[in-house]
Length: 158
View 1 (cartoon, rainbow, N blue to C red):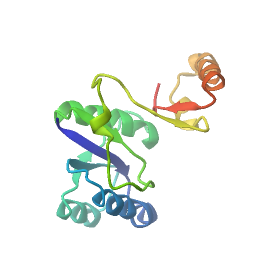
View 2 (view 1 turned 180 degrees about the vertical axis):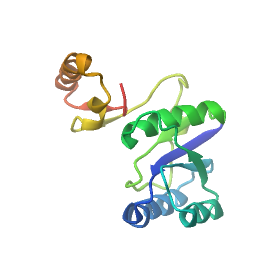
View 3 (view 1 turned 60 degrees about the vertical axis):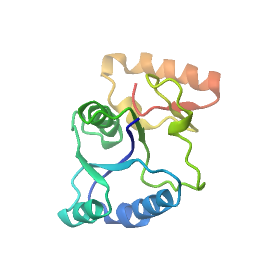
View 4 (view 1 turned 45 degrees about the horizontal axis):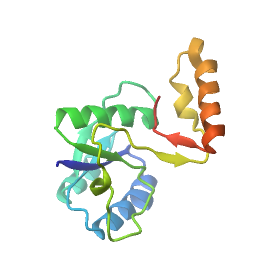
């Protein structure tokens, strides 16, 4: 199985140094041995060079939509297809991996399914991409699911 942990970065130095470096350092403390990659949304050459030297893959963004928070998921799908990854996990760059055992990919039994984390709120980027004529209907459906499940499934896109 070809697995990839993926995040997205622009050239925001605070995000890079305060969040992404701890993300990488905590991931290195786990038993994860597969590939790590970054979707490039305008990183400087210096940052990209540092990532390459650490064995982190750099992938171009698809740029199908202007909202990075949404486009990263579309880009992840494109990356999985183009580079033949079996499983791709898209993470925010501001998380840490608290456990030395990362079982994420080992627990996937159905590789054709979409797995998503639960979130406590409905992020605006989800509805920002909906065509105006469909927005009310889709937001109502999401609100019904949110009430039913007590939270929103954070798939990143509809």
